[in-house]
Image (cartoon, rainbow, N blue to C red; front, side, top):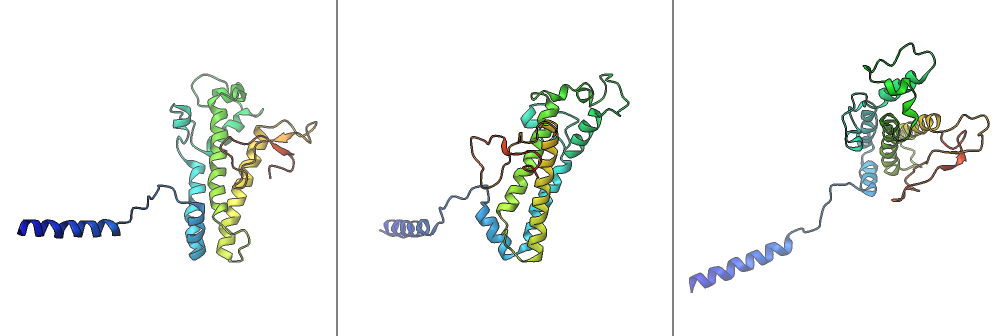
Length: 207
């Protein structure tokens, strides 16, 4: 009899404890709404997002998974600077097959499937994604100085990334004044299927 009684007590306790158990699934991603709530309560929390943006400028091999290869010339924005520097006419260097920038010296990086081309494209749009997350979590009408400061950094970096993309993935301005620019991705027009080139001219639409 005692065993039956104990069994009933434990069964009741288990049933009650299960009812109080929080079974709401929690994902790994923090939504923009949740970020906005956190930043609204404490504007200084936005510094983490800003630091994340600038950390990407010098990240080592951020494109390892995308390229499925280790590229020692894949280290963030300094790579982009070296690629474009070597593309210039004032670079005194020959393609001896021993340096990282051989494809840029011979302009083989102009092909869309080249790894250098993919590195630049991926780096810039990854930073744009990060800035979009910051901007989406910020109140554009805020008058709080610290929030304005962090929002301004996000907007500035995003404009800078589009400035780089427009220079590298668009024709020269003369003769193409109304040509469409690179895709402009914002939190408002983000689509799973992707976005086409900007309908605005590259002189105005990418900044």
